Image 1: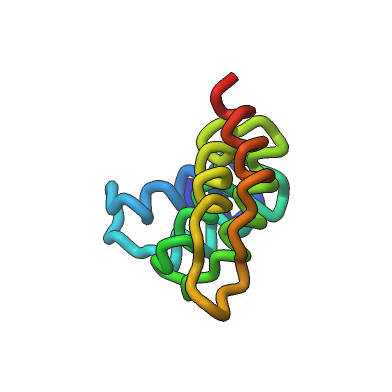
Image 2 (image 1 turned 60 degrees about the horizontal axis):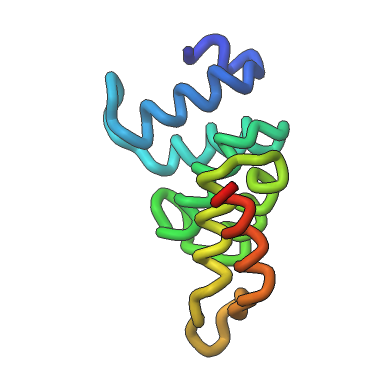
Length: 118
């Protein structure tokens, strides 16, 4: 996958990122996983967008950033990615700490949860 990923193949970038995120065949490296997911995500690959959002949500390999997590979940959710619809809905339901960049949005959360349920 490495050569194809370096040549800009989004599916290869996603697959190699997945291997790094899970330590399969390569040492686990969330930073490299995030870098590769971002390459594919920024080219519109929904699964990469959703997985990058999870890394942002948990601060794995990149600083935790709920606003970026929501942004990437939204991009994937709008393409019909069910896992991202569910994750975005749950993220928007949560009350966040004071000063957080992501306030709870129950109405919008309900919309994405309903999409995920269909």
